[in-house]
Structures are given as structure tokens and as C-alpha cells.
Image (cartoon, each protein chain N blue to C red):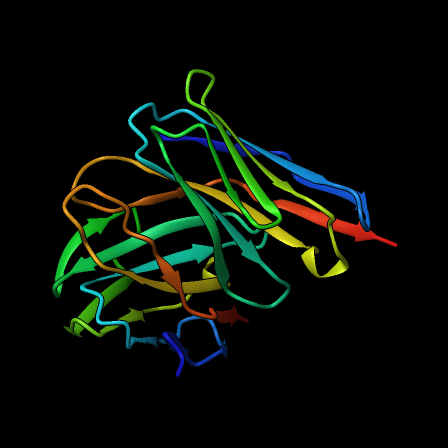
Length: 115
Length: 112
């Protein structure tokens, strides 16, 4: 009974291709996130959705487009993949609370390698 | 903007205590977290502390927060080889956008 799951776990693809990564959470949370972890292990937020509405959109190329069909899913589509997109992409979810702590739970990551 | 810094590497002997340090710049941080990442795995939440607390203990883990100096530490008592991992501190600011800003990560190596 995985809380936050991502598919695929590994993705190897050629430069210029378009690919999607899927994320699902069964925690009943209303907020989901995508983070990117580079080769130096530095983690940075990319996007966040609350109740299917985009609430965080960091400086990310337009080639990256998140889509949230419902509260339990947040997918990431990447167009025209570049070598620099190679990284581990983590999905996370949390329950928004007005003020107090909102612990984020992370998925296992998708390791993307662009050749 | 927010900035969270950690030392990159720490090596300790099994059975000793480990102390992982973190400094942050956002004085409006509400919660501070410690996550653990084992090789090839995702991030596992270890513990968190609310910004109006200065200490939290959870079994072998002790979190100390010096809000004046914006300094956070994680102490692991009786460190085991299974504790070898990368440890990330993260801070959450105020506002409706629940963004976590992560530190650079500290790789803890536990030797026999």
C-alpha cells in the first residue's frame, strides 16, 4: 500500500524526445509537488498543485508541463528533452492546513537519463 | 530568497553520536524538517520542529533549533551503519504556497 508512487522508476531516452512521468498518492492529500534532484543531490521544487490548481511554479522551462487530472494524480510532461534534464524527479504530497505543519511525503523518485 | 546550507560530508564510528548542522536565512520559517535519503531511494521524513520550539527528542534523534542564529542541528545517538545516508534539512516559510526549501544535503558515513 504505497503512499506516493511514481512511474516509471527509470527512464532512459534520447535528446529531443517527449516523455511523461506519472505520480499518484493514496493519502487523501489535496496538494502535490514535483521536485528535481540534480547530480549533486541538490533538491529544488518545480511545481505544486492544490486541489488541481497550480500554486507554485518556479523558474522552470516551458518544456515542462504539469497536469493534475484529479487531487490524487500529478503528472509531469517534458517536451524536447535536453541533456541537462537528466536528474531524479521526486513527487510529493501533503494535506494543506491553514497555518500549521504540512508534512510532505515523497515518492521513490524517477531517474531520468537523457542521452 | 531563502537559502539553506549544510556541510557536505560527515564520517563517524559506529556507536558514536553524529551531529549534522544546518543554517538557513528565512526568518519567517514556520517548520523545519529533517529528511533521510538512502542510496537509490526517495526521501523519508525523520522528524520536524516547529519554529517556536528549541528542542525536540524522538528516540535516538534530537533536534536543536537556535532561532536567533538560524541554526538547526540533528543529533543521532548510537549511530549505526544503517544510518549511513544523505540527510537533508528543509524549511517551510509562511503563506499558502507550501514550498519546502531544502539544504544541500550532508552525506553521513558510518564506519566500523
